[in-house]
Image (cartoon, rainbow, N blue to C red):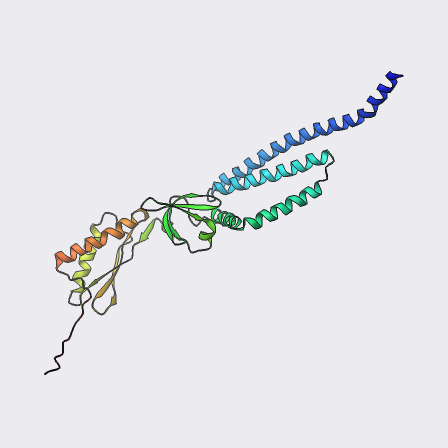
Length: 276
């Protein structure tokens, strides 16, 4: 009698044990397949990024991570379904949580969106000299939330991407050859042709100024006390600042040697003797 009862109890719970065992086995299989698929998806997205060298790898690593975690989220839901858990409420809860987090992190999300746009359109890249958001420097790093600049005096500036994407961006390194705009004035007594020859000689002897395209030197303005020359020599992008800051001294010395006066503000005072 006891043996019959024990056999009955075993037969009673056996289907449930088999069902749970089956669900556990299937859950393990789903988990293994999901992990494999998530890894494949990440690698596939990153591989696509390597084919398009014009786009930054950081963007595709981010998209690959998003694809991987999305697949893992569905894998988790599928595993919970195997054990009879109602996932509709969990999905709704996750959606509400995501919305709350998104509202709390609006600034971070705007930086993320701007980072994606910067990595897609690439208005600048690492090692470019840019000016944006009131800052100027060499780009050392671009990530999904910030852009890091290095200034000439070796300061590190971290700028949120939303401030850059929403502002004017000046990329000083985009073109390999750049023109350097400068203005120099001479007095009205100066021989214009002589002054132009002196400037041309300084530009021709500069080691970083290109012969082609040729420097541009023309009279631009007749001011109150000076005749102004607009000068635009061309150089390679990496020599821009060398030319910008070295040419003024060279022209000043050349003007001095040639006896050409560089005008400066004068004030004429007339004294009237009221007793006369």
